[in-house]
Image (cartoon, rainbow, N blue to C red):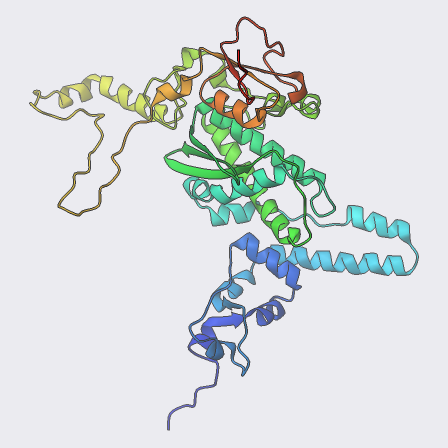
Length: 418
């Protein structure tokens, strides 16, 4: 006689676990379980048959993979959550005894700090993986950078989001990586290409935001905490890859006066002069750009050139010229194989002329125009001299509308009839 199988030991009942069972297995609270799942990138799953997967007569609503929960058992952050719980008990005990000073001291000095560095390295093994997941991160951080400070959105979080977003914008300005922009009712869409990856994000309009009570900012705050760590890593890698110093210098006084992009000063070897011959246009190594600069990939090309200049290698590589031989730097073309086949986008080298589109011009922004997006777009396409009215903030090239060096003026007023 065969062995009788125990119910729930195979099939969907074994592969799935309910949220209540997962919380009980990890021995943490439900809010901490939500945080841990957001940090680790674990989301609920939908089984084919909820009744079989729930192991009970009443089908549950939220399921997770059993392997994912088993994987969370070895997470070091679990110990930090338990330390938080132990600290809360100590604070409650001190308050019950009337020891307010001890409770404040415990809450200030004994609070454990959670580091997400190892999770970033774990979820994104390569830098390209981090760039591919940057769309949602930028959209959320730019959203929180424009929110007013409330009890649910602390000022420190808003200031951190603003600074990280400004640092990312400065990288796009220096490297001329911004390609497209589109304005809509939701906000302004931007698209940039960094190391061959297209990144699209949304920046809300500069209106007065009203924070409503139907939005759970605790969950959104958890995403912000993770995305700020991610963008910090990405900014560091982007800055160091082109020879910039990270973090850049930040002028608090200029930021308080509305300087924004002007409050950050970029330093680095690539900004010292053109003698380094580096091209900062989206990783096109070995190609001269508008500023005569190259990315770090130019080192590989330099080594290859040095090898080609060696006499013993040069003799071996000397061959008779072949007719109709394609150039070494020619781009591959994808031809259509038949009728009705998909037409593939042809690879093309990025146009370095766009980076200096507004370089010879000087712009003045009237006080009724949105200064922040216009300043960012103009600087991303090479403009070095942008002025605006004093009411728009600090950091302008000039506040005088009648400056003779101004070549273009941006206004949003009805035309006057002469």
